[in-house]
Image 1 (cartoon, rainbow, N blue to C red):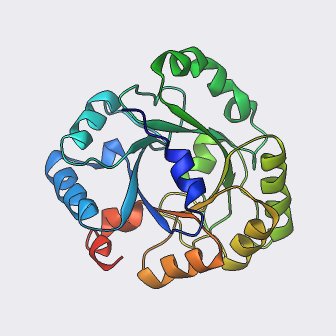
Image 2 (image 1 turned 90 degrees about the horizontal axis):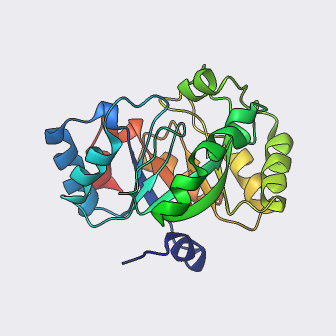
Image 3 (image 1 turned 45 degrees about the horizontal axis):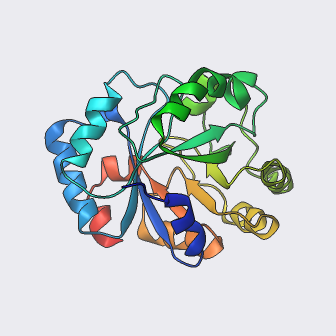
Length: 237
């Protein structure tokens, strides 16, 4: 059965969605089953799958996920290589905070026909990397600079430009294992300027931080390293 994940997000703009990000290279089967069991019992809405560098078989990884949960599985690809038709949808990311053409359009061309043939839901998403107090894997792998965290007007203008280009969501990313999450005032200004759903991820380790990000206007909060280091956080949400 085809899911309409984007429609669900848009139609519930006032609902707070939690997305659990799973990096295939950082999960073994025992830990995966445990984390997914916690996710099933919590308020997690979606499972995101991806990473900056993935060596694991993504097809098999997603099959393993679907053995233990009915939650929608959405690809969060670090490159064109991270594609699987076993997923329910893909965040088709365009790294609009950078100027590397491979991550603006190049990878998309490589996977375009496979996406069309797969029939999975495609959600075009503007991806903004925000400086978080240290160099991130995304910054290194994409060969782009993040937007300085104190340049909130630049972030807001970039997000607005993404919406004007026809992107359907904006993703503010502090980076995997970020020292600091995306600043609240930056989230608030971006939310003020755009009318499409806003996703925020990176550096979120506590319920108070998650609530603050939601209060600033995020429609979806992504938890990755915070859950890897403390799976019990899912029980607190």
